[in-house]
Image (tube, rainbow, N blue to C red; front, side):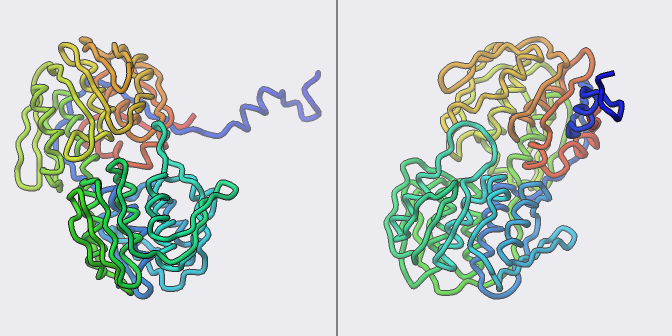
Length: 439
């Protein structure tokens, strides 16, 4: 028969061996209504998690940390290094008293971008570090040159070996200039400079994002002396010891922005609770320009949309400008707005992998230079699409919520797990028609 002794054809064997994949099935056209609360900031939680290693004794308790896959990977990494990590309801405890290693597992470290922070933290605490080059979203070139240059300026010996970044030496006094106001480099170097022998480090051309301020507040609660976080110049006076503390991270402005846009996309009425509205000033301004009604009510934002969206130009840039991480999401809204829009990204100039997928859904989008030109269409149509990163995946979900004529199937949804805690469940509670399937 030519099918082997067990009677199973190669085609069936291959089918049986194929890994199972989770996909989302979304039926659009339903308006979203109700209230939703956001989790703590992913981009603040991850570096704060790492900074807990700087406490040589005691147990740090973090509140509001989102239960996302990036956090779970970081939990595994810290355990591999010898720290004790345990969830207790919505809180997570970290005790790094007995670190046993400065060598980060390659497979784990390459799964997330935040593993970079471990390099400076381990150098500051132990004088040694070995960390694999980071993974994370593929949204264009994301070099860590600024991180390495800053640590070398502080006196560390840093070199690469077999896909690892290897460092040694005690960090000392330095004056560091960042070629670009990188959030990651600002946080990383600020963290590394906090623990030492009474040295002073000055970092100029810093990022001013809320996440930078939150990490500085956490370090200050631990006993660090940090001045100017949230401005272009940050000064850090190193201290010999940092203590374990209890700390609550700020709300996730990117999750909040995603829900604000979901309301606008579906002509819905959503109240997003537990936010810091000033962190979303640029997002709110653009939604209002598009014809969405936005009301700020203390730590809540109410969004109502009742008609066609208007086209508008958007420029993603460093904070307090429009956030690059929400650039794909607002492009999904503008795909069905009336008129022509230009979306430019000055942070990640080739962050447009999602465009081809939106075109599959009937969007008229053309990529050129560091931006995209969008001609709004009257309606989007259901299609089979694939998410390539966290925020591009969120953009596809938003587009699917509006799409007509059937069901949109979204592959690659593991990316959403890295950046959003319970996104789909929250959207379903607001009235979305979304089901997860395994194929």
